[in-house]
Structures are given as C-alpha cells and as structure tokens.
Figure: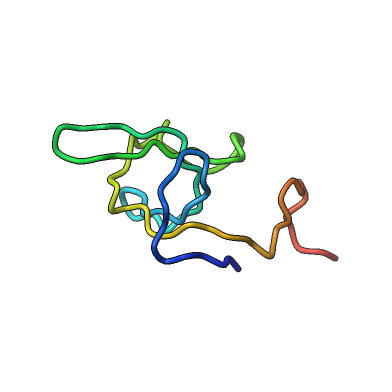
Length: 88
C-alpha cells in the first residue's frame, strides 16, 4: 500500500506514481531528469532496483501528464529490504 498526493509537485529525485507506455500498470518510479521537448515537457524515470522492472532506459521518457501522484510513504516492502517474498 502507498500513500500518495494526487497533485504531484514534479521535482527531480521525487518518487511518483506514473503511467508507463504499453499495457503496464501504474508504477512507482523516481523522477531523474526533466526533458524539454518543443511540444511537451517530458520526464525520464528510473527504478530504484536496477535488477528488476522497467524504466526510461527501456521505453524512453514519459509525458508530464503521465506523472499522476507524488508518493509520500509506503508500508511494504520497507525501503532497503532485499527479501520481499512472503514470510513463512
């Protein structure tokens, strides 16, 4: 579960809920670079775990309108925790 703010203040380094291209669900990504296109402002987004997931290195930058919300905090998994599988 995540707590988010619906009107994100888009700033470099922030964690945000974003719409990714294709049939991907809404994802949590870090805003790492602002890209100014003549037609529209765009964002380069990256994952915090380079071993898994998709980010702008795979699909390119995303439109400013695709940044939906700023992530305030998350409950699980805890940041920095490597074992994210179910407990037995």
